[in-house]
Image (cartoon, rainbow, N blue to C red):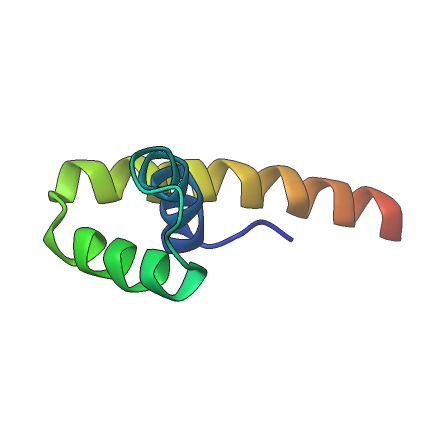
Length: 68
């Protein structure tokens, strides 16, 4: 099952945060990405939403094929 749009965003941003702050904890990354997400533009959020929809569609197709 595909990750939701925020989890995809968090994964994307955590790499950047880890590179600039190698000693940062997962808790701090989660807090920082939540704050960043809250302040992101609708355009950025839409990009991750569209990626989620694409992955969900692929997932649903595979699920339907397996059930047939």
